[in-house]
Image (cartoon, rainbow, N blue to C red; front, side, top):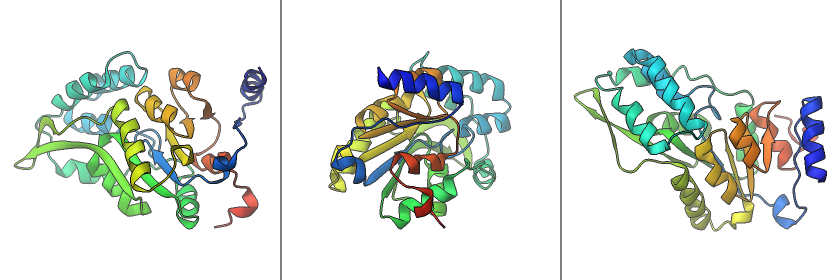
Length: 243
């Protein structure tokens, strides 16, 4: 009842809040997993690729439907990738070098690395762009989807299994095991319906500027500030965060 009242108050005042159980794990988070598209970056990369391929409107409509949870992610992903057939791989570098980074990412990554957090990207997007961000920010793990490229052209197919919502949750658990981190010490941050499984598994799941369905089902959400707002949910104060 208290949380419901706080949510209404937060909505009325356009503010964010975090309602957490006060235990030892709240102060000892060690692993944080991020969605990439519309979380770490302010775009869906598959939409950017589609624009270059001349199928922007068609792919964007499928993307939005999938993020709202209206159609199965794997089905939507397969349909969207097929529409990219014939696109030159050089386009990927141009997009990567001009990715619109979400407000607060620089500050967030600096602080997380400074205080020893392990950081992962678990994305339904593409490894090419995840690895670009990995190099830029010193991210520890990247799991995403691999586009098939033959003779410098996208074939309209992908390699391996799709990183969907179920797989994201599995990967979060796997990385926690590898790092010897209790699941209660993990954080997940994402915006789409395919992020809900990992938000539910993590000790602290945060919906970031998310779709209505995601906000409604996530225990925590950030809707009014940048991604560095995650730091406040981890217990940091501004006095700790001088860069």
